[in-house]
Length: 271
Image (cartoon, rainbow, N blue to C red; front, side):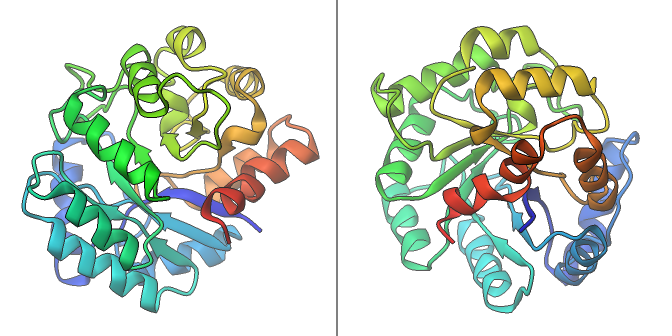
């Protein structure tokens, strides 16, 4: 089973506008789908992806209800797609909202420190992540630089490590429920090695498989442990077909490929 742990879609009525807004602000990007559930389903079929996880980003407080309803719609109607919920650190009644996520059967939440202008180890994030983890929810973070919002970087490796230590209170013998996207910040691999390798956290490979040195990716994955690495594309901002093919062609062992392409995600999602 192949699982893409990092994708994005939008409600049909705003998908075209949402894509154009991102492409206008980040002209080096292209879109590989039309940004809809149907478009992602078609991409999954072409790429041989059995399941994609949608990660909605709340860019301001007050978007929770609409995003929760769309996530529930995706989960009720997707054939190869499930959705997490989006939450903003400035939302009111954080615990109540996380309870609603859990009660809805949604498996996790997405946080984006750059779009939410909040450093990853901020007490507001610690509060959210600690309660989410205690509730059995997965938490996916954007990590490292966002090329559309390059300065400052709100989730550098050292501060991500502080968050993890605060959430788990220094205990490293736990089953990770936190995911750091983009190999935890591939723009600064030495910082990832220094602060994050070996901690109880997953890294996903979204947006980097065809943009970084394959040898660097392989070495960093092995140092961290390939049992804590997840395939991700960042569709529509990367092409699922291209990235799935590139990962299958990399010099990982067949066992490592099985772990990264799906086994680790299945364990994390408990499916």
